[in-house]
Length: 185
Image (tube, rainbow, N blue to C red; front, side, top):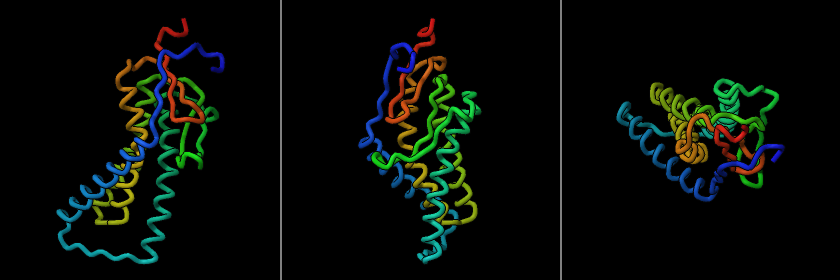
């Protein structure tokens, strides 16, 4: 694999399982965030208009793009990956947006990079939406929290391994190649 030794471990993510978990997390997030919203602001008014629908669609697209860009920022900040070694795109066959690099990163750095978008495009918008009583932002935050299910799945698998082990992302599949820290000696 591009001059690298055989990996010690390969982690493959089961996309149908991730899709199911994403739906569960999204529904749970929606229920929790809307319950918090109602607890904070008991006078609930709910209006669906062309403007709010358009705002929701545009907001969703922008947050998905930001989600992937925050992965890239994590690669740079936590893994020291040069910008020119990063790729962002959409795989229409799999129905996923992705951010990747062909550079090895430490397990600890990659785990931080995996969770950065959850905080920045899920939790932060949820807090802002709750603070300002913005139902559109609260709903978008729930969708982005649920949309991080694939990141959570990878994070859970990587959490079982030492921080200093090296990880290479597969550029085409939801798969990680893991190398023990002594693989290159």
